[in-house]
Length: 239
Image (tube, rainbow, N blue to C red):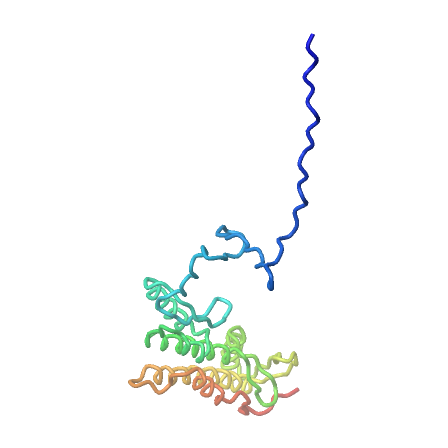
């Protein structure tokens, strides 16, 4: 019987541990280059990075946001007409300052600017006419309801010259008025309101003139501030 075939044990080779690459003589190795990334996350780097996007091009407009901020933006060509319509509407509202309207680009049409000035003037006239006057040292309301009341009292005084009424001033003070005083107060209030309307008419003529003589809200404010609200007309009322 032949002896068994016995092989000597095989010793595995020894693999030296792997470490960082050795620097070349007299220098350092280059740091590892990160991989290119072109996906939606992370920065785009490396030679395969796409070129930066060019800045937007197109018409530039200056407009006013709903919150009142003035901004400049680049828009598409077909949005310029929309901006023009919007700027006309903003100017016509009369709700923006002279400086804001002047900053709009494309600028609003001249007719829209005039319409805005007329709307602003009407609002200022209404506010002043409703705001009251001081008549012979007594604050008097001049709102619509008060004017209706004093008109009724004037009719009563003209019907009965001996009538007296208790009139409540704007500050809550009551005074006794005779027929003469009632008529005089009615005339004073009506006269004040008519001056407000007369001033509005003069302003409208200036806005609509060719060329216009009133082109700013500051001019409108000056005209209304010239209307006196402290008036001395009838004799002082009896307390």
